[in-house]
Image (tube, rainbow, N blue to C red; front, side):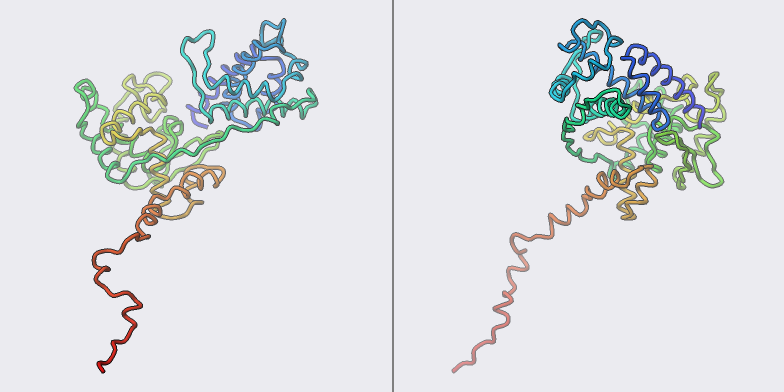
Length: 369
């Protein structure tokens, strides 16, 4: 596991432990029980969502006399029914926390994720015979509407890379820093478009993860598995140019291994890379909301168009279930939609209008009497 992944795991393990201290005591058993089958980010995400649920629960009648989440025990959980959970899902559509004046909005996917956390907790407690009631199992999952895939077309990709290299279209302030970051930014954008890696994988790359002998880069996938991604000549060229620049930098203490460094000579964060992509994409493709994930979608779309092999796309993108890939790429084939739009003729073309109909053409002219 890379240095970045280790530090990230430490950070969120500590954050999870702090959350467990305020959650009901039953949650400690739950998170300990799922430690061997889930990643730290999954467990932390569940903890955050469960905190929101139990905060809501404290304001309901079944928690009369209970002041904190630590006071919620199995007897309280037994009183929870499917209607209460449905009311909770309606509540999180638009709500406000005590320590935050900003209204929070949850779409169908966020609500489905929150329901998933509650289901996982109740399923565990029901399996361990701590409770006899599994109300979340009776609640329907919110209907998820498919989002259209947003990606760059070939001409937009060319404009994006040209914008990164030249800095054309950037503001005066942005241009002040562009010259010293252009090589790094080109390597980042090229790596996204040439491998389809996730942003978390990119920021976690160490210098030692690159192998120019085999044109491979080692990344840590979701779940902590390490894989070798193969890159092509365009990515190789961009990375080699960046390495010349990178070798001349003295990184900040604790960031010596990081491949991509910020202006402060520290490992770039997910947020900084998101802003980097947004800055250039607004110039190259102003009508599209392009993020690092959209660059990943661009790569997946190109690969599927060129190969037609959905299993290859799933493997390269690191999807555990090919159905996830099929849902996002095979079903969306815009080329086939364009073909379908043109294949049906509602009226004949002008050239076709002058031709006799098949029936008329088959009739023999009558001989003059």
